[in-house]
Length: 83
Image (cartoon, rainbow, N blue to C red; front, side, top):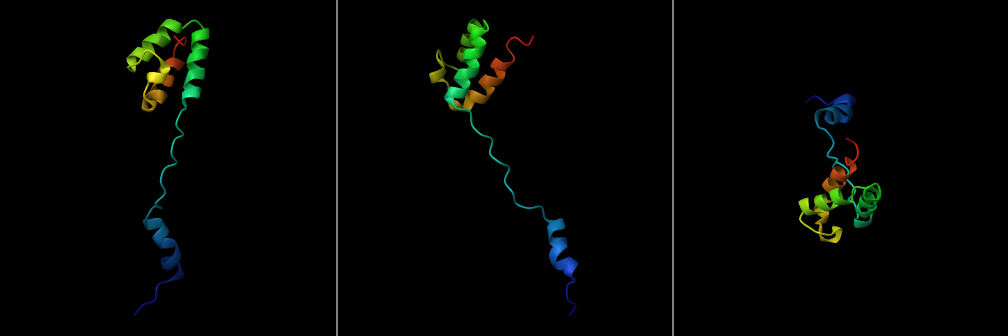
């Protein structure tokens, strides 16, 4: 019987199999964070565009938007005025 070398016991398994590490969860945006972004854009004169974005996500008011869509809504709002 052949005994494994220290390298085979300690190092080789780490090189062969990547660690099972879950990707860190991306923090969810809160209603207050989204409201702050939209309020900023509204003060910059994009009130009509903000209303259009809210309708795009199925609501007349921010409180009616599903939190799942907050990230996309903020991404859409952030491009307002960049063109």
